[in-house]
Image (tube, rainbow, N blue to C red; front, side, top):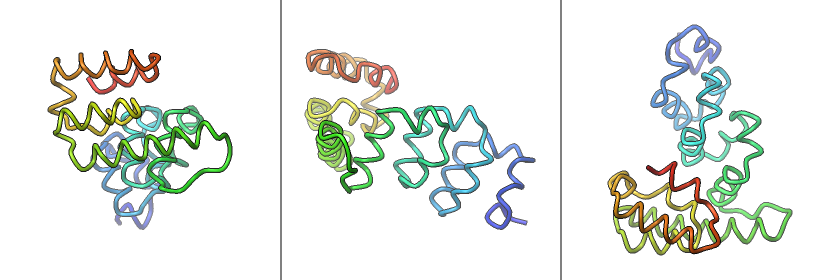
Amino acid sequence: MEVGQDPAALSFSTFQTNKAFLIRCAKGGCYSTLDFADRGLTSDKNFALSLLSVDVATLQHLSEGLRNDCEILLHAAALSEQDFGGDKDFCDQARRLRSALAMVRRHPNSRNIVLRAVGWHPLSLWYASSELQEDPDFQEQAAWLIASKDGQGLDVVSVAQ
């Protein structure tokens, strides 16, 4: 029996802690497998951002804490490419993040473009290439840029490291 036929089978498997497997399930549209994922994973911000980049519909399968997290909601709004009703400031931030994400997704290895995107919205840093995220000089530049923008998103720099 495959997990797509009976997602509850995952609760008896070691796959419930396998990030790559769960992301593959989400890519295949089998979101219900996420209901049986390890609670530590569905509460992990990096894993949540990976799932959201696959499909915003995965938001409903995250922990309650992450479903109410402003950064996660901003990512979901930006990735959904539709405006969420509500707070004007939130919608403006989502639009700004959406534009920054578009730049970084096209050029994830470009130091200049990623830094420009981080200037637009610090959360775009998450989409930079792993090479840039692991580069100490880049981390320093991004941290300085984020700190100079009223300190918004400083915790994102530590996530990217």
